[in-house]
Image 1: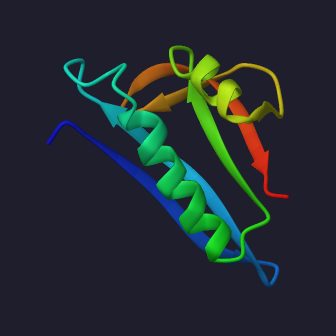
Image 2: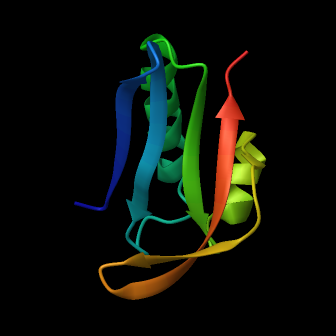
Length: 97
């Protein structure tokens, strides 16, 4: 396995919501277009399910990647704790047209 992506689709207030929880690639495949292809698959899944937008919390290293795809910051940088470790993240969103 050289990478994975995880998107969660759920109902909130009778609307389909989407949250991209994870996108990870091993160093051996970074820069070969797999991240973009995997992200486009997840975005397509969310759009086809009826989601109007997709939200995520980006790591510092992925922040520019998501901006290039069209995601925008929706709040200030924040500190999250994942598995007991502090992680800096940026809340982001992409609205489907």
